[in-house]
Structure formats: structure tokens, C-alpha cells
Amino acid sequence: MSSGAADQAQLGTLRAMAHPVRLRILSLLTGAAMSAAEVARELDLTHANASYHLRLLHDVGLLVGAGEEAIRGGRAKRYRYDLDNPGSSSPDPATSALYYQAIAGELVRRATSRESVGAKGTSSDAELWVPREVWDDVVERVSAAMLDLHRGAVAPRTAGTLRVSATTALFEMGHTA
Image (tube, rainbow, N blue to C red; front, side, top):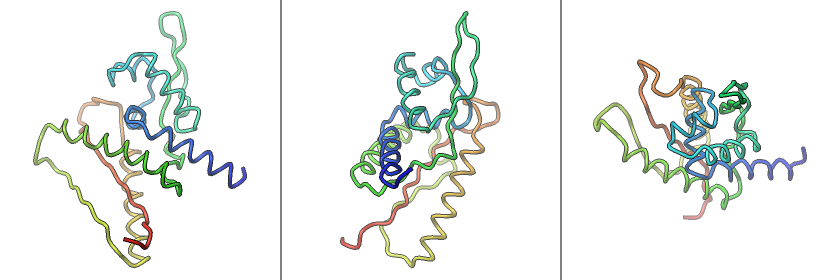
């Protein structure tokens, strides 16, 4: 794939992710493979809406097929989030802005649905100047922690689990203020 084609594919992936419903679907399908009907029930969507978003995410490679199951005489495709697809960053500021706007809206939704204030967690915001080696180390550790969370995710409402929110946005900025 040429560099231009790779950039276009990455932009398509980011645009697909830059929608609050699709962000929720990706989170949901991190812990379990689900059909459109199951996604629709869990996120209170219509079946048609869930199917549309699943197809779009599948078409850009963020979801992979996880088998089929027999449902009332038909077949239902199951999907899961492909954690190995790197698609959450872009050098294109306009596309990145759409993605971050969707994340911001999703973060507000999650924060307002918190049930126990004071439960374990952390949040922080910073715009800093740091040495390259500090930056590289922090990006590596945060990326590893997020991957640990994604790989540890299980089906919604599994006994003994916590419903949590984790959002990161680490990126280098330009030199102008």
C-alpha cells in the first residue's frame, strides 16, 4: 500500500471512529463478540442503526468477524473489536479534531452517568514542555496500560467486574502557543 493510500485508510478509520455511537460500540465489542441485535439492546439503538454502524466499523477494519449464530431461522454475524488495528491517531488536524470532539462528548456522557463519586480513579489535564525521553517513556507506558485494559475487558455485566471509563489523548503539539 502506498503512503498516500495508507494515509487515506487511516483517515477513513478515524472518521469512522469520530462518532459517539461508534465509540460506544468499539468499547462494547472490546470485551465480547456481539451481533447487531445484542449491540442494539445493550446501547438502546434500533437494530438497523446498530447494523449500519457495525458494517461501517467492519468496512474500515476496526471490527472483525467473530462467527455467526443461528437466530430464528436466520444467521446473525458476530463482531469484535480488532485491538491490533492501529487507527486512533492521525497527522491530519481536521480529522483528529473530529475524533477528539467525539471522545470529549463521550467522556461527558460517561462522567454524568457515574454512580459512585469518590470511587477509585484519576483524571488529569496538561499542556507541557518535556524532554523527548520523558515523552517517549510516558506514551509507551500509557499505551501499554490502555492495551492491558482492552485485553482484560469481558462481556458487559459479567459477575465480579466493574464498569469503568478510560480515556487518553497524548499527542505532540506544534511549537507555537
